[in-house]
Length: 130
Image 1 (spheres, rainbow, N blue to C red):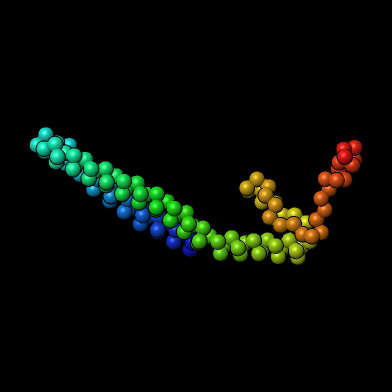
Image 2 (image 1 turned 180 degrees about the vertical axis):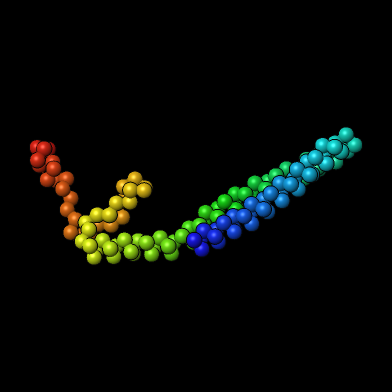
């Protein structure tokens, strides 16, 4: 719960900054459209370049923000996932389970003990397959 709150706070901060950048860009775009007829060719080119630079900064900020948030989410969840994995292994060992399946992710095997047996050779023999 604490990890989720921390991540949401950082997400909202980045979202707010991105929204501010977008508002600034839109104001500049509107002003450039309104003054396009009164500017010289050089002025229009410089303004167009400035708008392009702003757009590039917004896109870069968004990419960097997405990467940072993904990394941050991993950092925040890692201790919780490690703790869950240790608990699963402890319960599996204590209870003598051979396999633990994570059905929420498509039956991924989370733990198997050295007491596990691969029955594939036995099944192949039963079916007459070499």
